[in-house]
Length: 450
Image (cartoon, rainbow, N blue to C red; front, side, top):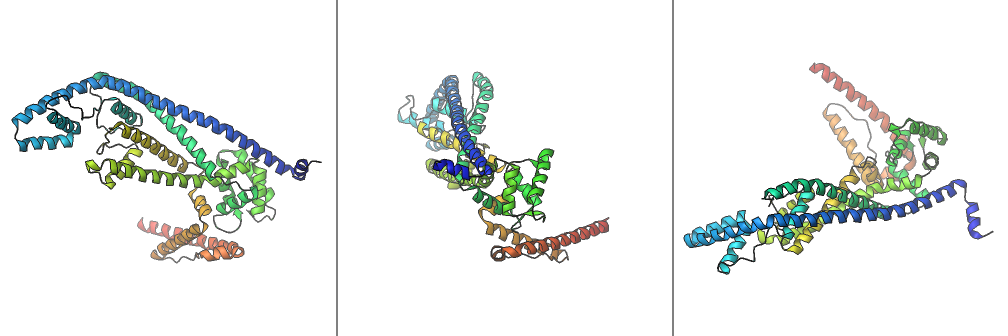
């Protein structure tokens, strides 16, 4: 018999089923990844096309009136230069530098060229500026540093927003979905099934007792994506499999019993465990990437707008306001030169996408902060529980009550696993008694107030 067939025959039915299930899941995942890439690129192409087409149309509508306004401003500046003193004209320049930077540039160019059409002043409604405006409108940032002045431009904006905003949201959704998948693939640990079970067991063991109570197993199933609360069939299956695997009839499952339970309860347990184990990693990795991206954007904006006296705090404030789509407009970027407009639009789009990834990952109903902390740093979780017990004891002592709930030292939790169960049971019963005392005292105070 060939060696490969001997290996297959030596495997049990559950192992064969698990291997075939994992192979099928991997094939489906690769196919889904290719489809997701196509969808994301298509959404980005549609959004980019909407920006370019909108920029061209708005530039055609608004560029002519802007040229007329610039010509009138040039005539006004020439007259003011001849009629005002140097001090008054300096005050006019100061006023224009605050409220109309284009006017100041036009002033300088007009004086240097002796009244010729200035070339230094950037047009708001050239193609670059119009594309920048379309991007801020589609992303709903809306700085408001310049807006359409013609009736045709205002009417166009109404219809353009109806088309561009959904395209923008669709692009964000596709990119964030693909980003979440990539982060999950990077964070997914390719361990054996038994190692995944052991790692998940440690994360779900909230009281560090070495066994999972019924509520802890129920919470574990929720983290793995099974909605027990909304399905009576799932609840009945859960209770049946839990009772069948609880051989000792002690109301809790050890690692071996938990492994048997999840294999019986769900055939696709390996995939579900991988998703549960990687949810916390995805949130923290995405948050770290967003923090680094915000830091890099702050450095770039602070350096580029140093000529306008932007401090590092101003640049950081502007970055947060932009990436959260608040867009107050107190700090507004100038989309010129064109290369900086490309950098700004690209950075802002991916900053918004990272923000969407973090929000979507953290708002996942299956994401559990406590499970993530226990999984990533068990000792940190134990110290946090010690601090919580200390705070409860302090508050109870301030109310005239004495807390009898002992605090479990971190080193005892890790060095004496066999004694944890009894200690935890004692702590639970004493904490329950303390809770009843607090309830009675609260009821007495309420009756006294009445």
